[in-house]
Image (cartoon, rainbow, N blue to C red; front, side, top):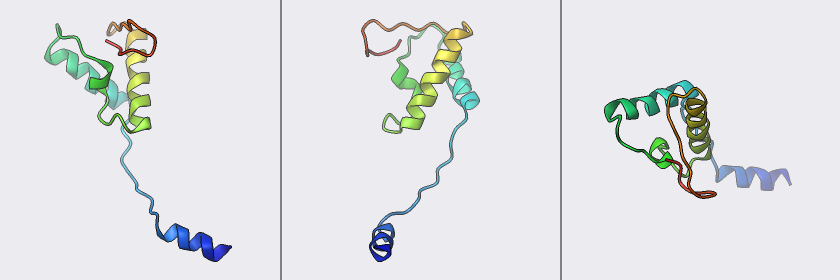
Length: 84
């Protein structure tokens, strides 16, 4: 059994990636609004990699925190719809 596990493990590798902090993501979002304060941005614009669950969750919590602190306004017109 150990031999099978070691054979399987040879086919995989750990990929270490740099995790961005919530503070850095908030600054990124804040910068978007500073560049063009009259523009409406979608939630998707705040996510650098939509396939990365960590990145999506980080952007979501950052946006919600900014809404809570009244730094930005957000609107979602339909259930599971895009956040503006």
